[in-house]
Amino acid sequence: MENIDRMLVCGDPSFGGAMYGCGTCGEYRFVPFRCKSRFCPTCGNKYSIDRTTSMSFKIVRCRHRHCVFTIPEELRHFFLERRSLLNCLFSAVRSVVLRMFHKINKTDSLTPGFICVLHTFGRDLKWNPHIHCLISEGGSGNISVWKNVTHFNYRFLRDSFCTALLNELHSQLGDSFKPVKSDIYRNHVNGFYVYAKNKKCNPSDVIKYIGRYLGRPVISTKRIDHYDGDFVTFHYNRHEDEKLIVEKIPVMDFIERLVRHIPEKHFKMIRYYGLYARHRKEDLRLEHAIPQQQRKIYLGMNTWRNNILFSFGYDPIKCPCCGRTMLFLELYFKHKPVPLIEMYEKAIGKYRHFP
Image (cartoon, rainbow, N blue to C red; front, side, top):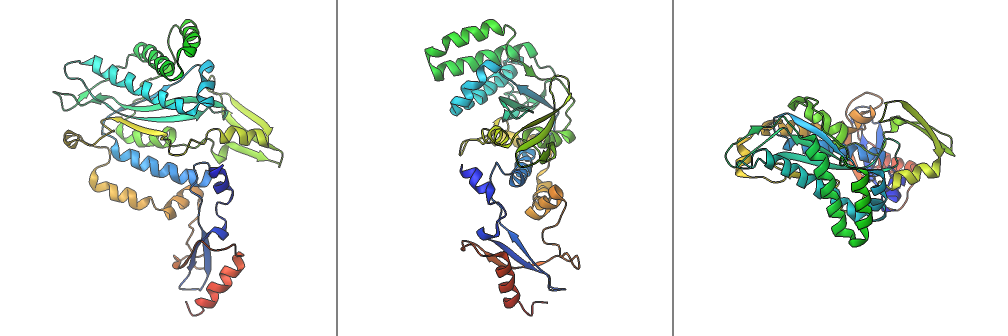
């Protein structure tokens, strides 16, 4: 509810903002504060950009494999009814990936770098928790500084993920989970589906993958086709055959599908493991996709002004009359609700001789 309340007043000038003025033609513009809620499509996009930038700094310059760890439909309701169980998904994926690399060379005991991101939604916005994982095709070992790994054992991933997750759930839910566990093993003899195909994700493409899969919001506003006050129409491409599906549902059902994907407060949706989990002296010998000297350039481009320009196609402090950059004049915050026209009148009176 906190996220929803904040989203509803996002951009409301009554909650504060900044007044800008043009030093050439005397034009004024008020830029309101944003809510910074994960649920807000505007602020969520900014959050996604920030997270993508942060993740890209950790990436080692090597090929990566994009894997998706999914669970069967009969397990999904456990995670919806008890949200803390979502931690089990991360624990299971972590143990499986580290064990797979350890088995490749037990003496060297390779440690890869991998990033796990929890998505609780499918393309149709229904509850479908799964883990997107970006794994380096190689690792640092006890002997080797770096060793490439090109073969991922699909069978091992499927079986191990199934066993690891069911054991985690059993430890959390107790013996009452035993009948469900037995049914799952009986109905899924090949384990849980894990997508791990090699798409030749080179270092130059890794950051694109991060932005596309690891930082996206529940639904893009581009996928919402129509809203008439009672019904919302949106589209998506079905996973099975990529067929375009158009759904029209009541607005309250649409909101219900969205709000269930708001994470609990302080819950980490993105987690780093292996080489990306910590900074060691050995890591300095590894070459990163974005060198240290280039990171200031990326951070400099990642300002709120540039993000609004790239995301929504307009410059918030560009003068609409002469096109020059407007200057910051005054900050408004923690004030009582005031009509926007009053803010402009006060600013014009205070900075009468501004140009």
